[in-house]
Image 1: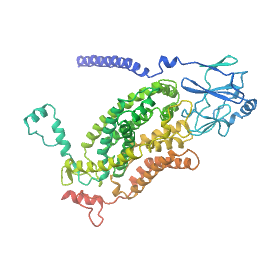
Image 2 (image 1 turned 90 degrees about the vertical axis):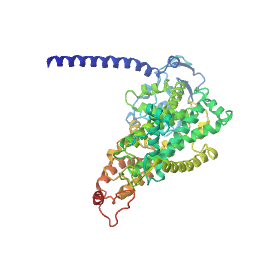
Image 3 (image 1 turned 45 degrees about the vertical axis):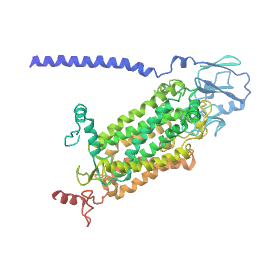
Image 4 (image 1 turned 180 degrees about the vertical axis):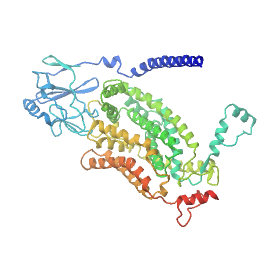
Length: 173
Length: 419
């Protein structure tokens, strides 16, 4: 009996060891197959874009392409800034101060991904109930700071990483 | 598979059949005992097989001329339309073929719902069928992306962004699906690869679907178990093949009507504008066959909630055989369920309609009502009605009509068993 038991244990060990090595092997092969679908080096190389902003008048905006996505650069008027800052934070689905969405001292420049946080459409400017952007796909309204106010989008439009290279150039990414 | 061993008559046939019994399989398929009362709603299995083969054949041909690159895809599709010999015909058959495929599959699914074909012992057939349906939707979506027009691009953007609703890992999954930081050339490339793959996965599942069907045999409009073979059955060939062929011809006339007279009516004109990542079309709508689910998605004012509800609308069908508590299969003998069935049909059609309309005002209200009913139908109506409903007497066999005098079904069966 004890001899038989020993045999079984030995076989169990071999089974477990085989399955384990097999699983590690399969995993090691599967990971490259999965990871090859992530953005490749050519895609990652497009990580930064420099934009000349000298020709943008107050109240106007331009759209540039960064990593295949539109980025809105809006030079806001002082009234628009005042309007964005007068909003009560409790009225916002995703509370965020306008000050936290711009660079200090460069308050007139709103730089954000022009991508609706619902399902990725490009919102239309100067439309909607809040004087900001309106997404035509599923009806999300954004205010003049790009914050979500009404509709299915869960969060404010995203602020990408960016910096002022000099007074006339913004580097996104 | 069949009860008696089959022996080919020719010597060569016997030699081959002993080594690979393909002739036995062929004999099984021709002799396969089929209920003699199958109506024309049962012809859509054959029609769907035709649709799949049509899509595969035209698709292989299109792939010989199409270029899966963001800079060239749109032009290559126009090249197919203008320069390739009969390219316009082949592409219109392929694009309208997708719609005809879905038309047929929806009739096929609702036939199953009406006659209770999903119930025991046919649950596995039903589940394999739903897997085919899911793959069809994936293939159709990816195929729609390939021309790289505005609707292709923005449809792809919206659908892939559904995955970004997943908490924590959503954005990583979306980027992984794209292979870029937005829908871009890597996305187009992989969609082409998968679009070419999926039809063959479907073909494999179709084989399993038919195999699983041939174990219990066909359900029938009366929904009762029958003895096979018996006077209630006919051999598949020639009785069913000729009926299927006639239905297929009628179906092909409608198909040809779309291809030759209104080839673009089911598409969207915005897709003849090349993809532009900076401008979203004013009205994004999916293809008509996805509209009911789109309406469900938009009926919820919450991103994650909408996505969950939309996927639930499909996945709830997988547990349908266990939600339905009625022992009677066919709705012919279920006076209450029958009415709810038609309400569901109207509900799904209405959801499809509001899915095409802007998500505001009365359409939003209708979408919400429709969504609530859709789920109530499966979660509440099916279990409860199955429990409470007094069903009509079921006949004892296909050949014999219901006993006159309104005998109880159970009694009728007992009497018959003794005979």
